[in-house]
Length: 469
Image (tube, rainbow, N blue to C red; front, side, top):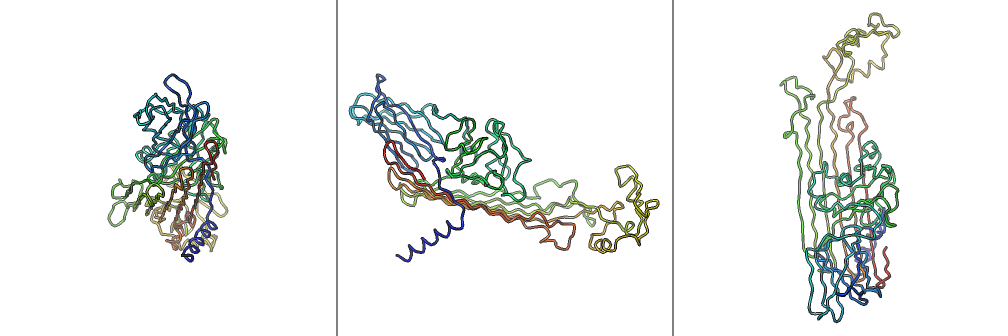
């Protein structure tokens, strides 16, 4: 047993040493506040108030103060049931409460005189109203994340649904940054002035301050965009903050599988593609894109330990057939540039070459560079009088995202979680697949990996004191 524990400890230390990680703040959580009164409007101190998450049976309790007020903070997002009990009064119960990221709704409670065994149940209540948050924000919930169409299934694009959020494509991630970064100007702020949090931990790319990849839609619970006077939890950048939460397991096992396919056989042929000289048909672009994966979650121990795992892979194969270049023709290599300078090859305007040695757009072949002539032998031959030649370029792309999360309810006042996410992007340089085609550039290859490890620990020390790491 001791040997097994030592091996597990070694694995944890190795992961921490090789991975950028952060301790979560109280960012991907919510809280409930309110005041308990009797039927005449008088405040009731000493009332036991309990919030219970219906998916996991996780609960947290507090007692109202001398003014009848209560606050239950650092609650995981999700559906809740709120109970209030005081001797000499009927038990109050309200269901249908759904807490979103950074939500702080005020829920008034009224207790009627009666026995504790009598319960007043409130269902299908009015929408929750927040009165304490100074920020202006909007929540993009799980239903919209999964149901709205997304090109490439990048959930970051949904930020554009929020008011005053304007995409800045010119500022998007450069070729040396992590693929998937998106720039948004929120309320007139800078495109790189948005703070990203995932499960309460910073999720900005230090290279350009754009976002690191967010979980794919099936693994993302929701996110909240806030601007204006943001709270201390999320006021790290001037423009706005995006606070996202990964899905968690519940007391029920749940899973799903998916696949999205794009194929050139389903598309119209590009009218600019090259024509096959033997068949007379235009070549297709060979597009084949498969995006597939799934999720699986459930309890490791009912009401106590929950897991969530997810994977998405993307495989793209494409051979574009509309690429073209201009190479020297046989006449040009013999010193005759008359056709090259003609109106047919210059958008209807004939030109006269005036460089040294040119006479009537002709040049002594002996004046041509021997090195250039040697390189021209590796170029494809063309029968086009202007030197135009079409070619293709293969650039396979393989992407993957792996997510694992474990939530533990150690006690009513103590909870912890750990989440690890790996996002990989591999694009093979075209020259590696076509080394003999000197028209193909060596640029365009990428081998990227983004690791994200977040650990969170929350403990309530008393009804007025708690600690979060």
